[in-house]
Length: 56
Image (cartoon, rainbow, N blue to C red; front, side):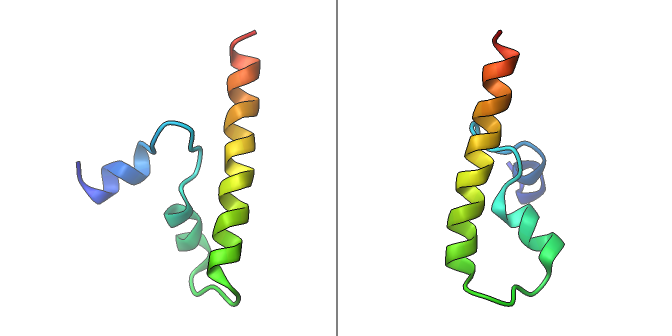
């Protein structure tokens, strides 16, 4: 699978991969590790929220 395919079809449990979000930011002006950790937590919450409502 190519890198572009991975970004278009993220792994299960991911809505928007961090790599795609970083493309929107360009150069990140802070501690990227902290921002990535928080983004992944937020993204996980969004995925689970959507999954919960889709299963009802």
